[in-house]
Image (cartoon, rainbow, N blue to C red):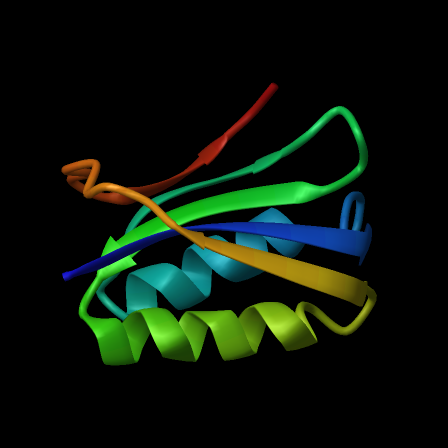
Length: 90
C-alpha cells in the first residue's frame, strides 16, 4: 500500500482536471480525493497499490487536454484509510 500527496501547479483549474483525475483513479482502483486549492494548485491524496499509484502520477503529468501542468510535487504520507475516491468541492 502506497499513500502520497500530490500538488500540481500550472493551468489546472477550470479545465476539468479534478474530473479527469477522479475517473482515472477509480479506473485504477485507487482511493483518496482531489481538490482545488485557493492558490490555483490542485491537491490529490491517493492510496492504493504502488504500481497503480505510479500510473496515476504519470497521468497527472499529462492532465486533460486543456490543462498545462507546470510542476508536480509528491510527498509520501501515512495511510489514510479512504473507502473511495472523491472530488472535494470548496
